[in-house]
Length: 267
Length: 267
Image (cartoon, rainbow over all chains, first blue to last red; front, side, top):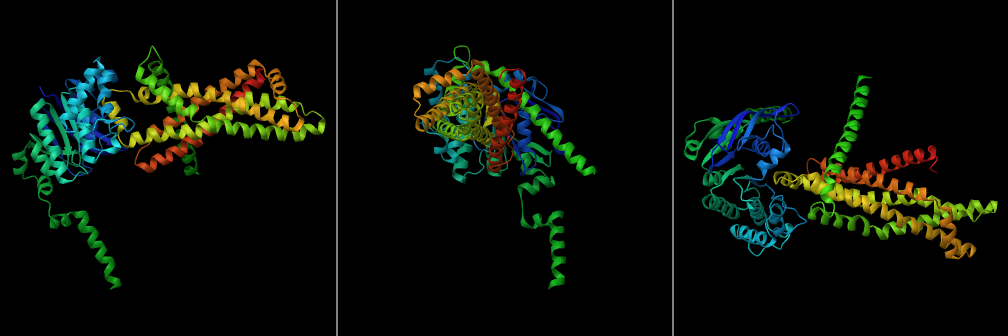
């Protein structure tokens, strides 16, 4: 049975359809990358799976609980078994890095303070931030903040880890380091991971399977090799973007045509 | 004509939506406020409440005191200018003492707290929304109302009435200083006359108003923060809106309370 099962999920904002009856199954221990261009609905899908928004129709089963219909208490039970590393880290600025990681442990467990301290130190070591625990989030670099967010996401030993655009805003070296960290987590903890990204090198490095979204629909779901071999026009456009193809899109071509027509009488 | 009616209808619905949201938020906070109490609640929420009390109360003390002293002087001087013509200068004592206890102490404090803390609540929560910290709280199975709002509300409920009492004292003290310099009336004698002119129900009505003002300031500030969507400019707008709306509602509530107390013979 899949750990996450999305069925006929449709999401609309003010009548505008953002996700259109999408279906996806994610298996235990799998690393699923949601790939797609900006605005295709990746982050919306993530927010739906996390129960942050309710859809127009469809269902999302996370560990057997339908997060689109369950009560807040049931949702919180599901949420205690997941960890999320947000795009901008979303660390609490008033708390030190240590306190950010300790927060879910203090609030949701009965662990002794010394044990919590130990877990925090271990998580900081895992993300290579040992020695930075006393710093405030605003004192960290972008890459360090993202790693601190991963450490916080790991605090409650989650079964499922979500990453929203982990490489966004990072230089290639730091982005590659973060990919290594994700691979390490997969090997060390065997957690199921859902990663939202539009970075191709990162996606092909860390994914077991890739689900390619285009305008609110999955156009291809498969292994890395299946995606590479896909003949779907949208997948090909995303994988091999060329300037000629970009200018061939109807909207851009129409714009330039109109622009040139308007220019001619003046010349 | 249809457009005008449409506009009026839309504005009315917006205002009703706002008032409805305030009531829903207030109800949710009252349900969560137990968690902020010492001994029976969560110790981290109580600590957060104490921190907020220091920010709302202690940090505002110099400003509120100075405002009260200035207003006390103004009231005494304006009153004396008129009352002297009727040989009733000693009524300045009643004017300042009763005016501050019933009205000016709570109102001045509310205006000061609205400007300082109401805007700070909106800015803090608005920033947390923009940086996804509120979402992070939710996916970590924390209830933002309990985690963010309830400590602020409890702190305001305690700090605002305390500040009002201090404001009353400094306002009345300023009246005493005016009487000392203008009529050489001793301060001890002035305070005895002032205490004679104040009735217990004056103090109680003033404190009831303070509690209502604290509720308005905390909830309008927090609601403005929670309604932020978009980028940092939205945070700026919410801050301004929090001050404008809370000051307006405080004055409206003051008028309603004063009318109730007047017509029920509590004045």
